[in-house]
Every structure is written in structure tokens, then in C-alpha cells.
Length: 51
Length: 146
Image 1: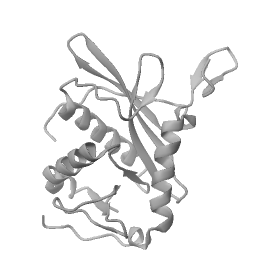
Image 2 (image 1 turned 180 degrees about the horizontal axis):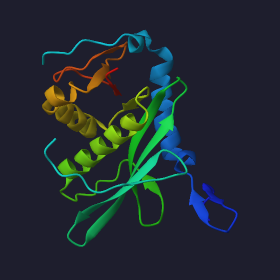
Image 3 (image 1 turned 180 degrees about the vertical axis):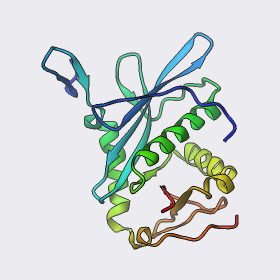
Image 4 (image 1 turned 90 degrees about the vertical axis):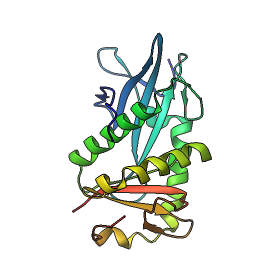
């Protein structure tokens, strides 16, 4: 069984993908950006762009 | 997006979705995983291949010649997630420069339609700015219009 698998009560194996190193690495990159970014713009709905 | 997406399944354990990319006899298991970031209501989206040995990869090139269908499916999943959680935003990026260009190209092509329902931003290295088709971005952020 992979480390990221977890046993449920009746012996069913349920895989939790969020524990996988690839996923953790991708999440770390996102957090790196989100930590330094000013996110106040999310509180302000933007008007429709005309592109 | 005019391509018909693949049918997908939601996982009840975490915010994950799976579908199969099919080309003749070749079937590739695809996984879209949506994970909470350190910022409230912002989730990271990752598109991964589940390899035959169970490993996950975001770099393998499957050459299944169905990228438009795969992207249409991913977008259906984004729409499903944001319909369920309209206060959340999703961030994502390609795993390499080629995939980044592909995402930017598709977002640019579909922008007029997407922009009616979603707000799309790109992170330019310093800040998130409104998405422009010719922009260069390290990350994309999409959320439903409030």
C-alpha cells in the first residue's frame, strides 16, 4: 500500500492524493506566489473587459 | 469551448476529479486535484496523470492527441467546482513553459465567452492583473463573477 493510502473501517483503501510530493510541490509554488501577492483586488468585482 | 469534454467523476474524499483520456486502445487516467492554499478561499488546481504504477506525474507527455478534449474537461471541472463554491477562486499554472503557453492560448481564445461568467487574472511576477491574451504570467487565477 502506498503511504498516501488510508484504510477505511471496512478495509477499503482510499487514496489521498494531496499527500503526494508532486501535489505538495505544486501547492508550495502557489503558496509562494500567494504569500507575496496583494490580493485585495479579490474584494473588488471588476467590470467586464472588452477584449 | 466547443470541444465535448470527457465524462468525469468527483471524489468524495477530497476535491479531486478523475477522467479517462482515450485514444483508440490507449487510455490515460487523468486526475484534477484541487487543494486549499494558505490563503482563505483560494485553491490550487493541478492536472496530473496517474501512471500505470499508481504514481502521479505532471510532466509526462502522453501524446494522446486529445488536448482540446482534455482542456475542455478540465474547464468543465473548473465550472463544476466554482458552481459548487462560488466564493472560491482557483489558481493554476502549466507544469512547463509549453503547457503555460497552451493555457494562455486557450484562455485567450475563450476569453470573450469566459469573461461573461468569470474573472480571470494573471500573476505577472509582481501582482495579479487582469488577464490579457498577449500577457506573460506565472500563474492564473479564475473565479466566478460575484
